[in-house]
Image 1 (cartoon, rainbow, N blue to C red):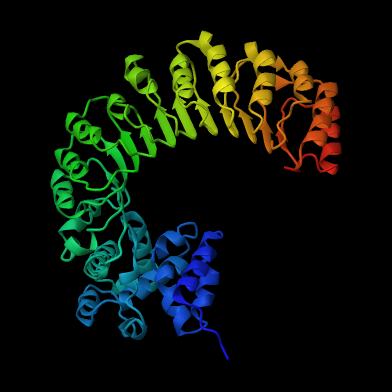
Image 2: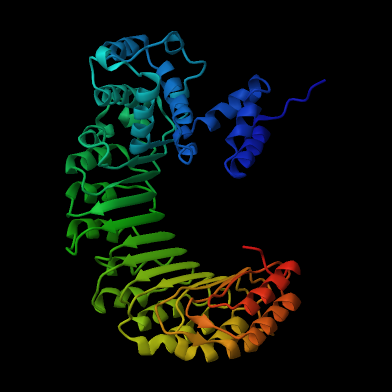
Length: 485
């Protein structure tokens, strides 16, 4: 007698399968077991089929979902496509077993364009002498019908990515207006994640603000003007905004957008900014767990002063790629985390206040006892004192990566000897600056310490090696102290 598992159990099992390296092949096999398994697995398989294949942009795999979606179209729509020179084969004339479009939860306009274009090239290939329509025209027509069907049929859409693309050209303006399609007031009302270009027409955002009011995850690319429609979309959101990614493309201020953001950022857990424009509005983000800021230009000290003096006691991950930062401001920000940080990534070219590097390192040592990752620069002048202290105080360190900042060669032999007895026991990777050197005695002593203290092989890299260095490293690879990278 067969045992019928409850649907709740099947959902848990199938979600676990997906979480294991996105194993959709196994999930598809599960869908073939019986009708019950099929009914549970199919919606999961078709939540975001194109995104699941984005690393496998082969014609065959990307064309399969498009073929299925065409089968989901009405007979009248298929006739419209056939009049545009799209071959509706006997397979495409058949009705799909399931209404696959209704399962869609994530839609990306550029990815859909790529897949539709591939399908036209592969499945609708026509000799030149028989062509009545250009392939790009057929791609446009196919996309229009697919979009209409998605918006009319899909009740589960939670994630929407709308981006302009050079490849799409004029198509971008046509198919960025999904909120105007019939059925949008239902299918787009529960959007939770929305990624788009901030330079889209204000009327697109105004229409979106009438429908999509439950967005909690915003990714805004190409903020090049103070778009009032975008400001309205941000303002009308009824749920707390949890993650926000902003990419500005000018140095201008955006008062309308800034005013809308000011009252929506209090609950943010993740903030990503590419090119800072106004940091004061984020001074109340006391719930941040992840902060990533990139800025490639000079900026005034006042731009970040209020922000870095805020409370960041929940911040775990800090990524700062500031070409010309103020180190004392970074120090203040880290100090205000009060021990919550586990990951620090710092990149710069030339700090305004290089004399404050000691302040920065002492702050990390004093206020980051839970640090597991450090990726950044390390000034040669202070390494002898601060690196041993870092390894001693930040005992949970797992990844230590020092990028080359173009400094002169520096001998760290004494440092390698001094840290050999205090190597963090969970250290998994140690990647040293290309400008650092050490003698064979120091290297051997350090690796002896690794053998005694580490429970797993270490991924280790040091440049400027001699043949004797390589022999020592090879010896510890054989001993399984180092990984063979």
